[in-house]
Length: 313
Picture (cartoon, rainbow, N blue to C red):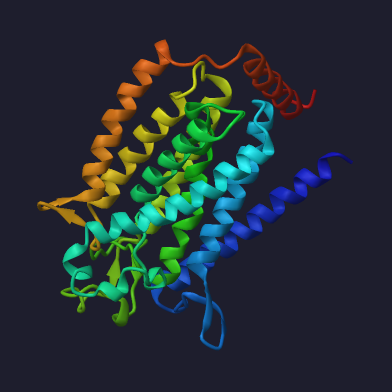
C-alpha cells in the first residue's frame, strides 16, 4: 500500500513532462503564442514573470526551512533574513541593471522605477542578498546563524528559484539567443525581436538552457551540502563556481546582454565569481567555521534513512 503514492507521483510526473514537452514544441514552432500577462483587472496586471519569481522564492524557502531547522536556525530569523534578502535583492537587481544601462536611463529618468517594464539582473540580486545577509547577521541581536551559514542556506536553494524564475523570460519572449536552425529553435513573434534581427524567426531558447543548468547546479550544490560539506562557506563557493561556469557560456549566445567597456557584464561577473568561488573553497575548506558534528550527524542519519527507504529496507 505504501508504494501507491510513489507510483502515483511517477505517473503524474510522466504525464506532466509529456504535456510540457508538447506545449513547448507548439510554442517553439510558433503554433501557440504565449502571453506574459496571467490576469488583468482594469489597469492592474498579474504577470507570469512575477508569479514565477514569487513561486520560486516560496519553493526555495520551504526547502531551506527544513535544512535550517536541522541546523538550529530559528524560523523567525530565517523569515527576517528572507524578507530583507528579497527587498535588497530586488533593489540591487534593478540598480545593477540601471547602472549598466545608464545610456538609456539617463535620457529616460522616469523609467528607472518602472520595474514592470523589465530590467532586473540576477547578479545584482545575488549581491543584494549577500549584503542583506551580512547586515542582518551583523546587527540583529541574538541571531541564530552566522553570516557564512546564512549564505550557505541561501546558495543551496537559490538555483532552484532561478530555474523556475527563468520561465518568466519564456512568457515575455525575452533573454533569447542568436538566430539558429537547431531542432529546439524557438519562434519569437516579430514584435519581440531585437533591432537588427527582425528578418529572423527562430532563436536559441537561452532561458531554457539556463533553467536546465540551474536545476543541475541545485542538485549538485544541495547534495554536496548534505553529504560532503565540512565547513560553512563551501556551499556558497561551489554555487559561485558552478552557476558562473554555465552562465558564462550561455550569456555568450544572448542578444540582450549589458556591456561595460565592450565586455558583457554577466560574463565579467561570472569570471569574477568563479575566481572568488575557487578561492573561497580553498580557504573555507581548510580554515572556515566548522559545521558542528551534531548537524553533520543529522544529515548522515537523514541520508541513511533515505537510502534505506529507497532500497526497500
